[in-house]
Amino acid sequence: MKHFSFLRRRADARAGFTLVETMVALAIAAAVFAVIAEFAGRTLRNWNRGSGTIAAMEMLTRGLGRLGTDLSLALPMTPAGTDGSTVYFIGDANNLMFVAATGFGVGDRGLELLNITAVTDRDDFQLVRRRGPVANPPPQFRDSVVLLRGRMTVRFSYRDRDGRTLESWQKKSELPAAVNVAVYGPTGAPVFPAALVFPLPVNYSVDCFDTSGEGQTKPPRCVKEPQDLPESPGNAPAANTQRRNP
Image (cartoon, rainbow, N blue to C red; front, side, top):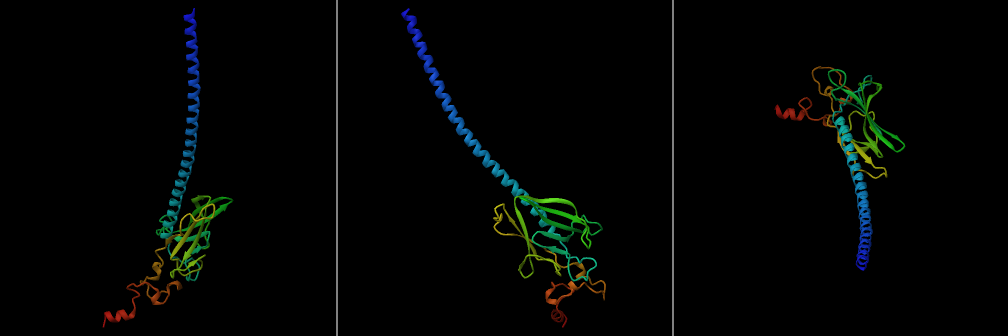
């Protein structure tokens, strides 16, 4: 009997020690799970923040890339029904409208009138691209495409041939040398260190250099002082001609 009582006490002691070990293990596991949960939460928040930043930069790259391509195709075209002294380019801080050789317009030249408009609805900003046939007055634009969207602001400005920056560009005899695009975040801080500059490489249309029709009157915007026109065989200075032909 004493032997069995001794064995029972040893078994009870072993069972009590196992229960304590289990409780300690559970406490350690709970602490480890808490640390893992905190780490996972931070990682997930950082990942969401990082993925959101990447998505925003991809959107900016695509949208501004499309805008840059359109501006590189801009042409200095005179609006129909005018005296020919101005080109079809209208721009202010929130809107752009110009003729571009996109290749999708009606006719063999593939010209379209593009409209880029900044639209703000409360905190939701959109930069919308629309297109239409070249006409005066401007047509009803169609095929809206959202280039940029989110909690941001985009502002346009314009650089002339002398390097000056203007807030608007209307009723000019030529296209701007470049369009500046400034992007601001929700706090008003600039997204990029400086405004992006999109140059317009073409500024003289074919009708300014066409010599096939002798005696035809060129548009007034083509009539400039010789020093203002780029050198070409058709407008070389007379002094140079004399030196070549003594």
